[in-house]
Image (cartoon, rainbow, N blue to C red; front, side):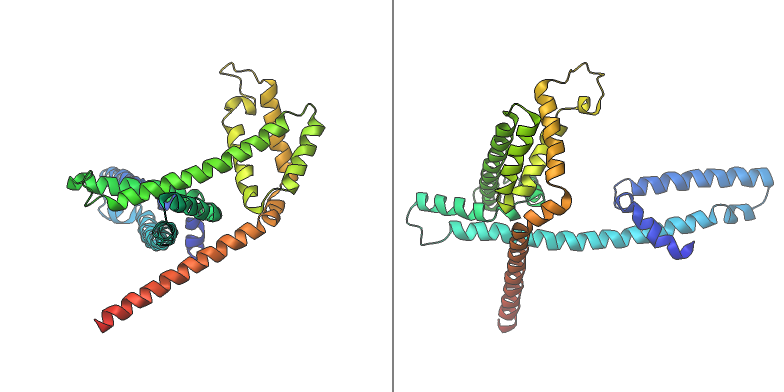
Length: 296
């Protein structure tokens, strides 16, 4: 029904925003045109060309309009997200440029502490943005032929330094989670492993809960198809694999979604407050720039 067109269409938002949508439209329109021509030759009626597939063409036009609106919405959200990412980078850079640091060692220590404090903000989206921003900047400089020119590649240099610092902090976290996992796997019995896991979770810092669950799931997913019972590749499940599968089940039992939300509340609240602070600072900067332009 027409009144449910948008509701139903939005269930396929990924397709409407995909690069394949235009090609799918072209292919379908081409097929419809061929069918119309065949029908016209068979019936000898010009009116059939106008009537056949008319409703489907209207639906496709409405889908195209809906897709355009989604693209604009995604662009606006992307721009807002990019601003928040740039504010995080700016916060890190401000620490590096703080004149109170008397030596490079002091600056390095301050940067390490700053990145560690920001860890809840250094999520997958921020890591992905850094990779994207570096690739875009490298591409732009390469096209202009100034990739290795210090006068032009300063921003690229800053992005890469920030990326290195973020990766270093995240790798320290991953090592800590792997150590926890190894301690659990060293226990002999299933009950001992689950009990130790329970105790580790009870004292786990609030900002470590979500990353720990993610590392466990990533390790198990890297075991391949055999963990799902597919032995086509001839790999036999060993004792360590079974322990890892048990670990994932135990994590699921001890950390269901509602428990994860409860234990991560302080970290989530802190991250939300930090994002709000960054947005407020961004708003203040815009107001100052606007005032400067008006007075200038």
